[in-house]
Image (cartoon, rainbow, N blue to C red):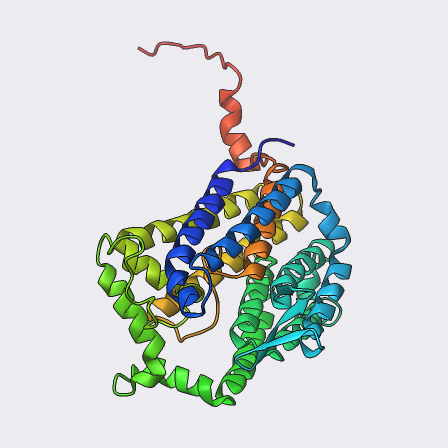
Length: 388
């Protein structure tokens, strides 16, 4: 064991501080309107962040990531049970969706827990079954069945965008495991067909897709969130209007402190602030790749790539939605958007990756590198014979 990856740790801490700052700015108007203290959402997020950091520090120092490998199956089954709780008396319905559970005042989103446990399970499966992606019947189909059950339970909430993200990360991990092209192509075709049918079967999703593809300015109702988001980003220009000076948070832009908090960030800090956040996410991806390449075992490799990939892809989708380059979805911006479940799960996920970084090893030189460098390791004496 050695020191953890302090660069990754610093990136996570900076993103969380940016998130707390923006939540305070973006949520004050909503809190006042609802008769709450203006710092209600900021205080709640701060408390959860502190608790998450304390648990994360304990994980970084004391936890052995092999425990996750050992209990991956049990963790996944527990997460399936939690995904069923929204349909019980403990379930909380918000805007017609059953995505939350409230037990004795503790409200959380089971799908956030399920996505982490699924990545852990896939990492364990791929690490323990080296050639499973090449065996369709005995290797690939059992794994895809597990992914399918998790995705179906998330779809029933319903949470279309989150289930689609789960499928994307699964495919990325299978590509890293070198799945044959014929299997990958078949999966992509079937997945695209199924999710296309699901998207077209729901009227509001059809309207979102049409508004995005046709850029229907004549019908602003279907593009209201996108239009207000772009107004917010455009108002920030290069350096922004200043912290706390956003105008769109006063009920022009829906979800200003959750899904569209990046727009408020752009309005108050401008192109400079949004660029810094994107650079931080790119740096997080880079450090994750470095840790994965030097991981001590294949389980750590797949776990690192799956976890970092999930956070990075989710961030890019959120930014794509806010900037109007993707259809509107309900995915938050990791580390920055308001939310208890995503906040704590992201913290614990990064703590696991930083814990793995304490066990990384420098890979041995390849045979080619050894052959090239060997002559220079020992002094070689050459007798020089002048030629006349």
